Image (cartoon, one colour):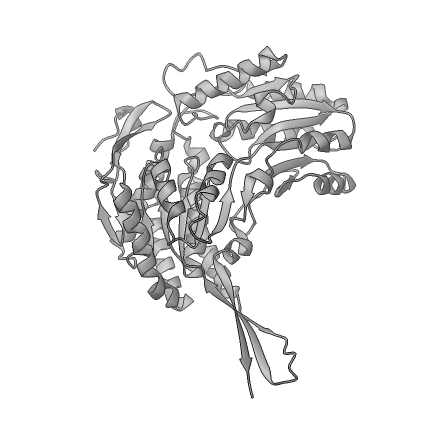
Length: 489
């Protein structure tokens, strides 16, 4: 089966995209969706979604698989994780091809995602080996022994976003398998292909049935079933704050644990002691990488008035270098996920301009692109807090730049949001960094450039979610603590 655009020169690694339920590849019984490459607006493939019965079957399969999988020694689970890791390594090119086609990303922006699968499986297996049960202090004078023992929670449901199809799977698959939990993982219907193919890989290596189930399904239908079911011990998701609130509100049929990475509205504070060129390069670059469709991308930049004009000039200069493209084209910024997303960018810019903001660069679709869901990287100044560009999570290539006169003012404006995921500080003065970092109410504070990886905790506060992805803090969420109180005589 060839991709619809022969100029791309890609062949899909499979002709059928099947659900992976209870160790078997089965056709979806729900509606059929056409996955469209947003870079070309041409169809990539069709996939039949799972229906309500199949979603329930996946939950029941994970429930049935949990006793045997959780009872396996970590070393035995580890053998399966390493077998899966090697199979992914062998299929990395096919997974990346599907990811590129369904997301339209530039190769340079997407190539890390298949490596994430390998890295997160490796890290969480090794992290689980480092975890240990504890002997607690005996207060009975030698007549007892007390233990705190980690036990896997049970069935996990993971509902994932479309912006990083493989990386998002990686952050969940690693701790689920290492902890001894089982799971139902639902990819976004906009980008289900690479995840469903991962199910084909697991089927091919004979992974224990029911441990992991991949179901691509209607988000609303699946969300109701997942939340209302008594089977899941934990609901985890990557998505919007509204989606997270809805999941929590619908899940009161049983006591469940939540781990959610939700929306963001990341502020950037640039002081006169910061590297101005590096701050511009990262802030504008964040809007060019993946078209700004990243939960931690810089959105609202607050620059000290003494360097404000220079920052704006440099930002507009960099933004004007934008060349839109998809997959293997010569470009430095990719498409948005859909035409609707492009129209939303136009609405945000129009709202800002109508209320007095200025467009320093971008603010429109690229004139040289008749096809594709593209929007030029945009820098807005004169932004006020009543504008959509300030208040909402943009999830696109729009950056606002606002001057400030003192750090208290900058911190206050930065915190003026319901979100609390990531923030950025550009300063070489450690006293400033400490003062700003302590004042900002966000779960991730990046100073003079970000860092990421499986060993680092990733997650927010306020309406940006609860819990962490990455690090031992994430793995801890997939266990509960069982206390043993033993009388010795």
